[in-house]
Every structure is written in structure tokens, then in C-alpha cells.
Length: 100
Image (tube, rainbow, N blue to C red):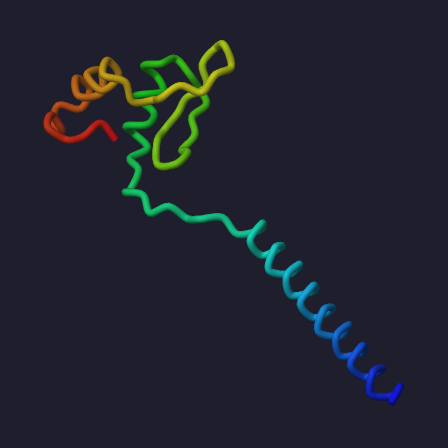
């Protein structure tokens, strides 16, 4: 009778170990994958003009929006109303196009 209980305990420990390792591997996979956002084609000339308007040398794309690093160390939106007017003045062939 003891042999039957021994196999049941062994099987329970084996199932627990497999589930624990599988859960750990799934957790690692979730931590290492990042979602890829589908973005439109970026025009580097427009980014450079907007960066020049704001007087910055550092910009980043985050969650589909462009930001620049301000002098106070904060990330501010690259696309402001004034900056977009500046951009359309520099690129007259794109008067009705969106800013970025």
C-alpha cells in the first residue's frame, strides 16, 4: 500500500515542478518581449527642423509621439502648434500635411 502513495506523491511533485518551470519561462518571455508599434514612415528632415526650432539635440519616439529633451531635463512634445507652423513655413510644399 505504501508503494501506491509513493508514486502519487512523486507524480504530484513532478507535475508541480513542470508547472513551476513552465510558469517561470513564460514570465521570462513576457519580460523580454516588447510590443512593436506600427508607425508611419518618419521624415528625418521634419524631425531635424522641429529639433532646430526647439533648440535641442536629443529627441525620442515614445508611444507613437515624438519628444525632445528640454534644458530643464524634462521630455516635452516635439509637435507644438508653433513648431508645426515653423515647419510648414520651411516646407511650403506640405501646407495641408500633418506635422509629423
